[in-house]
Image (cartoon, rainbow, N blue to C red; front, side):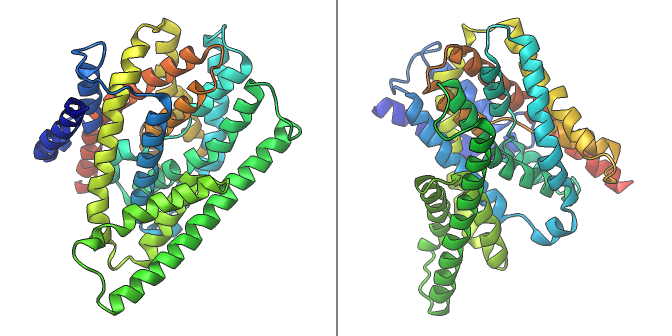
Length: 398
């Protein structure tokens, strides 16, 4: 146990000292963390004695994703978003359904052994994107603000939208449902996940903001404890929504939007410590993912899995986004840019672990395909983020 703790803490310590240098290069934090996890895992030096069970990884990934979603949402400029809402709305209402359809059709062609429901599950798992892996783009002011806000909002909401879809297919895969037809179940779950998640996020944030303002007016906020509210509120939103039957991810993202808007004049001091905590959670998640999942997936690799993973990051994502933005006035390069920067990360990992727990007949194929796609995404999106962002900066200077 102590060796595991030393390895994880040592990795965080070393990376914290060189993070600024790495962020300016083509290497990203998740690339380093996954390689480190693989190195100390059972297929490497086998130093990690920690038994990473599916539930443990799922729980850690969920908390990390909720915290990252809340923080990313709190940094959104709602004035820009209201003015430039066309991009995220089109990507969510047109691009996401088309991505699911393209992923399903391609999966049917590539995986003869998978049932149609299992293919649908795979397409759903790989549809949501991860804002945390696109930080090099989202925080680079060389990229136009409307594109950055569009990607941030899309990645914050598409995983919450995919949650009820995933559970519908899971219910059908494990033997159907007692709740009626699939269409009825999908609509019911979608309404519950989105509605309850939104309500929980709004109510908890309104109460918290009132308490913070009251405490500030009486000078009760201390330098030490002002670092806690965002972390605690993000987890409270997520856990409460999950407990009452809603989407914790929707609660975290919508709560973050509202929190950042209501405390926009003071949000920097609240978010500063939370961002470091979120990065630390992500570091541990990726190290365990590299040790427990990536190593296990290597033995199951096939050409079909590799081919589908590559298409998932390119045609299956990029073409639907391009189509969704036709007629929006978005430049052609911006359409391809938005389509490419849809990295797969924590949401796909969480969804894959949920599927693992159901012991589906071809669960290993699904898990391996997700693992390969996520790893390829981390590498390819990591090495292309800064160069393409610099290209936007050079164009803006001309």
